[in-house]
Structure formats: structure tokens, C-alpha cells
Length: 319
Ligand code: XMP
Image 1 (cartoon, rainbow, N blue to C red):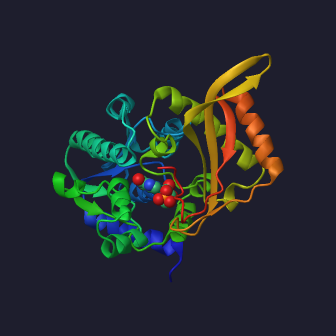
Image 2 (image 1 turned 45 degrees about the vertical axis):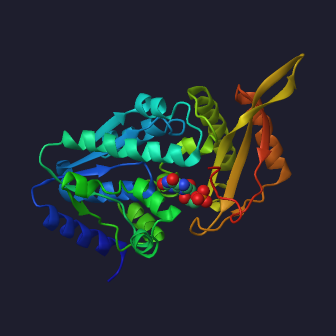
Image 3 (image 1 turned 135 degrees about the vertical axis):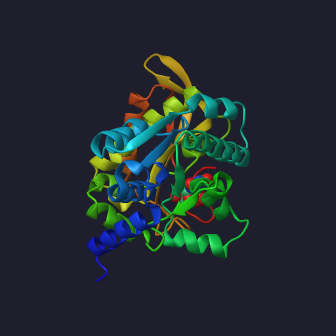
């Protein structure tokens, strides 16, 4: 009987059998996959699980607090909140090449994860929210961009380096099944339905050089945009929506004075798997209202554009 209730029971049994009385560590990103994996494993082995949430300073507004509140306070998990913002933003300082930025983040992420994991005594297992499509993809592609994505996303190479064995309780599931399992485990619908968020986070939504000032502006603009999308009931129709802050300042007028502030681009796409995507056909009313709100509510932005590029030829992210 292949219901999620039955899957849950079987998975819990299997996790207990594999892990025994050993300790497990899990990288929690706040995304659906790692969250469902963590909750499932926590249900199986409780305090033998420690989650590590790495805050690289490239998260959205309020994201770190949400994750800590949910997993530490609500689920009572052992959770290390690794605040490494200074480290990541320091290393990224002055870097503008997209691939270099990704490499720096990926490497630091592994270093940091390893540092915290080493502090957990008796850790023998590393838990990952690997899905069935990840398993297939990592077999059928080699050297392409998808491998880069996976290797960052799933802390590639870490288990071998640290002598850890893998626990991957979602390996047989597709994304919609993971969502169903998440619902079965009591994760709130707003959490299960969240848009995907890339491992390098806001770094790839801030083309060119990253500065703390730009990130702050970006976080505020993004929060207004997502609020607009939710208020208009559009969130669930969209695969991913976000703001990118452009590496250019433009002239504007406000009251009696001139402004010289950043331009930003709104992005929203529909997609099935992220491999291809269409831009979302917002109404002009929605776009106009959103632009006005962002310019009025977010100091530092005086111009808003809407990205109408589909994938291909564009990518979903700006870098
Ligand atoms: P692109 O921009 O390549 O994005 O059309 C396709 C999907 O992948 C996500 N993405 C990433 N995820 N690390 C990740 O974990 C990355 O480096 C990365 N780059 C893109 C993107 O958000 C979209 O869902």
C-alpha cells in the first residue's frame, strides 16, 4: 500500500535500523527537501539528530529566524545556527565573476559544515534530502552545470572526506511526493509550497560585486515583491519569483530632488522542473502597483523593471 502514511512508517523503521544508537548530522537549508528529511529523521531517532543551518549572509529577509523558530522551537530539534555571514561576505568582497562567486560559496559551505560537524561527538552518519531525480541526474550528467548545482546543494564530497555514511530517506521520491510526505509529517502548507531557493542564495541575484548595502536593499525589495504576489493570490501559480538588484544606478526624481539609486528587476517564472521556464504574465496593474510600492517602501531603489525572458535562452537566475 503505497500511501505516504505507509511510506513514513517504513522510512522511520529503516532509519532506526540503519542508524542504531549512532549520531546523525543533517545540513538544513530551510528548503523543502532538507526540511522533510530532517523532520522524518527526527521522528525516527529524536536527539540523535543534530541539524546544522549555515547562515551565509545571503538569505532572504527573516529567513534565518523562521528556520530557527520552526525547527528548534516548534520541532524541538538540536539545531546549530552557524552564523558565518562575516566569513562568506568577507571572502566574496570584490568578486564579480559568477562562477568564482559560486565556487567561493560552495567551498566555504563545505568548510563551515565540516567545522560544525566535527564538534558533534560520535557522528557516523550524514543525512541528505536527495531526491530520486537528483540520483538520476548525478548519474546521467557529468561535468555540466547541473553537477555544480548538486555538489553545492548536497554538500558533495563531504561524506567521504569526513568518513561519514549517508542517510538519504527521500531517495525514492519525486518532488510532489516529498511535499505529500511533508504534509503527512505536519509541516505547514506555507512551508511545503515554498518556491525553490538556490544554495548560493542572494549572491546570484546581485549580479557583479556583492556589498552588504546592496544585499540589504535587495532583501527589502524582495520582501515587498513576495508580499504583493501573496496578496494577489499568485504565489502558488508561480514556480519561482524574486528580485535581482542590478549593478547600475539610475537617475530619478522624487519630490523636489533628483535621486541616484539602484535599478532592480522583478523575475517570476512558471516551470515544471526548472529546466525550462516561461516568464509569468502579470497584469500591468499588478506590475505598476508593485513598482510603486517598491520605490516608495525601499530606500535605495528608484527604478523597477520586469524581466520577460523565458528559459531558454535566459536562465531563471541572473547569474
Ligand atoms: P537557472 O538559473 O540555471 O536555475 O535557470 C534553475 C534552477 O536551479 C536553481 N539554481 C541553483 N540552485 N545552486 C543551487 O542550489 C546553484 O548554484 C543554482 N543555480 C541555479 C535556480 O534557483 C532554479 O530553481
